[in-house]
Image 1 (cartoon, rainbow, N blue to C red):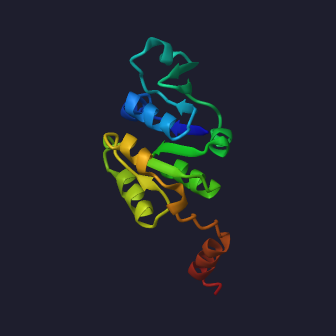
Image 2 (cartoon, rainbow, N blue to C red):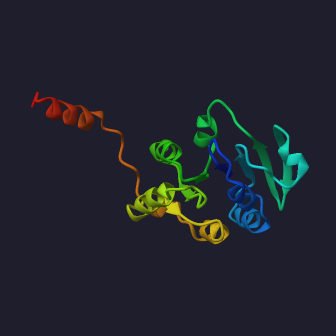
Image 3 (cartoon, helix red, strand yellow):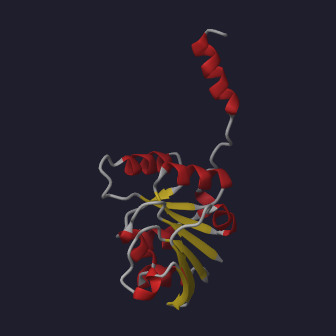
Length: 170
């Protein structure tokens, strides 16, 4: 089984470090995840080898592929059995629309804390699981994808109705 971890287009060193940590990797391995793909963005990793453009390594029984950026992460999201992500709105919506199990980790270093607010709201609705860096391994261990409520499909008619109402057409 495959886990895809993404930090988006910025740096989120804490999430990258947590994803490569022994507690997280051992938990993933114990749950049957044998492969982890890590999109690390501009994050710096202590191991010199990980800071190459891309690399593959095995750690704690998990095969790890890591790279900085690709034009699209759509293929990785589609292949993944579990996605762990920063709590950026674009990434969250893309993953939820794919119907993939999603654990989000808001980046507490961002100024306005919007990631925390979005993650919390979507967790209350049952669409994903939100956690902190410190609780990532235990959240993975207790995560039950079957308990996730599917995200509703996009309905463009709602937007067009809103525009029509605002323009006075309705």
